[in-house]
Each structure stands twice: as C-alpha cells, then as structure tokens.
Length: 114
Image (cartoon, rainbow, N blue to C red):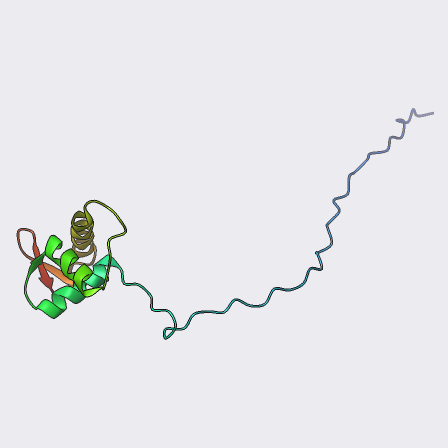
C-alpha cells in the first residue's frame, strides 16, 4: 500500500467587495460663464497686451507697472514681479523662437514680434 499524504485544508480568504454606498447624488456644480466671471489674465498675457497697445519696446518693469495701472494683471505679492515677467519672456523666446509673442530689441527691452 502506498502511503498517502494527510489531507489538509487550505484556507483561502476571499476578498469581499463592499457594496457601493447608496448616498444621495449631489447636484451638478454650476459653471461660471464668461459674462458672470471673467478669467484673470496671466502675467505674460498682460505683458503682451501692454506691448501691443504701446507699440514701442519696454522693459519688464515698465510692462508690470503698465499692466497693474490698466488693471490687466496684479502681482500676487512677490517682491520682484518684473524679474518673474522678464524670465518668463526669455523662456518663451527660447522655447518658441519664431512663434514667440515677444522679441528682444536691446538689452532689457522687449517688443511684440508681430
């Protein structure tokens, strides 16, 4: 006779999935339309708009002052918003080259490319 191995029961834990909760559905959020809430302009967009309106090359500091005076853009509270705008313009020129909205005319001054 052959010796047989003793039979063992392997216990397998079955994963039990929780039933989805039957809570009340929330109403859809109302989205603001352009007429009710205007989207704020970014610093680069404001700089491009100011340069287009002025028609002459400007420094980053002049662009920030003009954008704040016209209400296009307000610095979020940093001490050097002009340095932020300057570096953002330089990044856009480097990344997009010919497709950039800005062109560097002389040291520290920019104009619109179109």
